Length: 352
Image 1 (tube, rainbow, N blue to C red):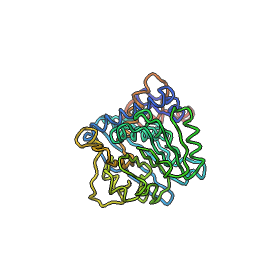
Image 2 (cartoon, rainbow, N blue to C red; image 1 turned 180 degrees about the vertical axis):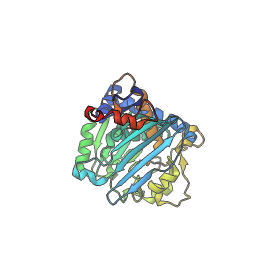
Image 3 (cartoon, rainbow, N blue to C red; image 1 turned 90 degrees about the vertical axis):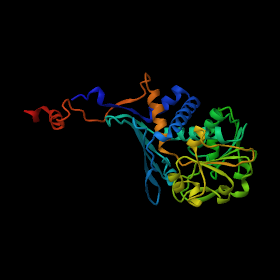
Image 4 (cartoon, one colour; image 1 turned 120 degrees about the horizontal axis):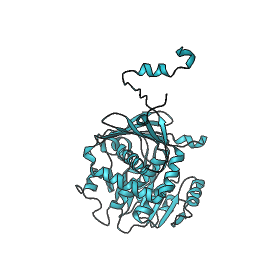
């Protein structure tokens, strides 16, 4: 039995996602994603919001990240397993779905391993555009794994970054990142210590993978006037910044009930003041106020950003053919006769 057209769900495979990136252009796609994320943050109060549902193990975490704006529902499945790279596997993999709230029918299924890297970078740059010091053009990229090139190119496309200073405890990771950025038009500097990486940088991005309390930036490394983009901490027991930095910085977060459990601020008292990003974007709260201020984006990733990214992909798929029509939903001619549909699919001999 051939499924009806209305029951077929567009599925964006990894190959199709890569083709879509090249069809649009990587930097243009990062700009577009940032615009969609910012637009959804402006209507933040419309969304259902809940901390992600996490299942932790000794080796990592598996999470579901749901949200809805009342018309469209979305979720992402994502894992985080730092030891995977030792076995030639990705630390993070993901897929996501959008559905029509009125019917409950899915309208898009997509890979999100690549898309998550893109939306995370787009979010970082969207925030830096509002919080980094005016004229900031140099970033220290500490942690040169799978996120590093996307983070760097988003800062270039959205914030006008000119120089990136790379450091990773694994020199091969730094060499990989530098090679991948060879044709980016950026001045790429390979560094041998985090202290060297932050020299002259107005934006400090930390993105390391170990699931542990760590001190990637110590208090004495961070001077006045910088913007810190801390994206490595994303689960309980995993941090990157010394507590002293947090006490000196103005901290900006996506969704406090999630960030207080998973972010850098899990090291602070539960009532330590933070500013929600949506309030800055809508003008309800100030962002950077002075040249001397240290601003910190305590980024853990939130479901609305994934919703925005899936919404962007859905809108850009039209007329590209960059998807599979997936036979995901049973759709009998008579909605009450699911059994009859199954029976009609039997081999001819069984029907006789």
